[in-house]
Image (cartoon, rainbow, N blue to C red; front, side, top):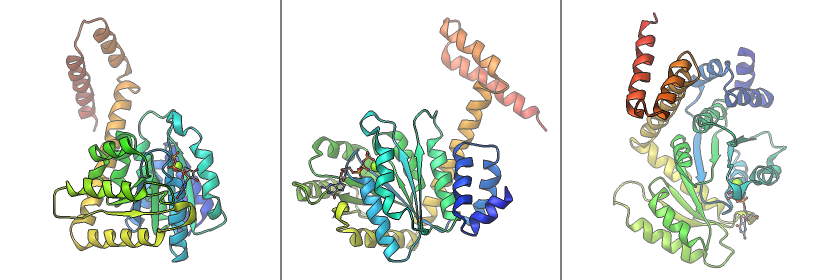
Length: 317
Ligand SMILES: Nc1nc2c(ncn2[C@@H]2O[C@H](COP(=O)(O)OP(=O)(O)OP(=O)(O)O)[C@@H](O)[C@H]2O)c(=O)[nH]1
Ligand SMILES: [Mg+2]
């Protein structure tokens, strides 16, 4: 195991791939890997890319990667494969789109399947981003579909959040206003080669007017990711955001935020496992039946389970 860590730190691609698999599968060795790598993290600029399905996020990530590579910077990519019905084929699509970097040793791409997972995707994504960071990738990009709460959660691990939109998404802009507006550090209207891009950009600018003044003001940029257009401006805006974070408390705040998010996930997952699958399985299943049979209300059952959990954990040395 220490061999994997040593090789990974020396830049070995196979060791990196193996370490990610172990962490993704929540293998017992994941703890040791994370422990060994943790001191080597904290260097990368972690960029979250989110937005509605089909706006061109993967194409954008690919174009952004090309831009960073031109500047000689190394890039790690985590593409979270959504299990939503309309994007079922995304994984294969992503592979094809990322193809142009497949022979480049300065780029590492990993797709993370969400299908069939019971939570924990967010923690795994954060952990994988940090493994890429430890492996020396200067830029780490996380792509997720911005459709619900879990994507917002994943964005807790990013230093800079890019929300990608496309022209003609009318209703989606409304959704963005409601949810993702607050988490965006940069807006990109992609597919600027199609009709309505300027209008979409204007609508976003107007929505931004409603944000409370002061602090970082997100830019609204237009790109044609498919033709690598507008990407230099994106790189500049991201560098500006990074400089802004580092000039004040922002950088530190985001490190604390991601540490908090990850710690909460780990603790929650562990407590859930202990109570519902581990040593307290019998207690929990009988309480579940009691709630079902209306012999006990769910709050009382939860109180009882937590009481049992805490009294037994306290007895341990
Ligand atoms: N016209 C135009 N089409 C684009 C542009 N960028 C991407 N596309 C096309 O938009 C489609 C979707 O692109 P993706 O990169 O897969 O979009 P995505 O947001 O990653 O999609 P999901 O991951 O499935 O949500 C593809 O057919 C792309 O070729 C662009 O700048 N202009
Ligand atoms: Mg995609």
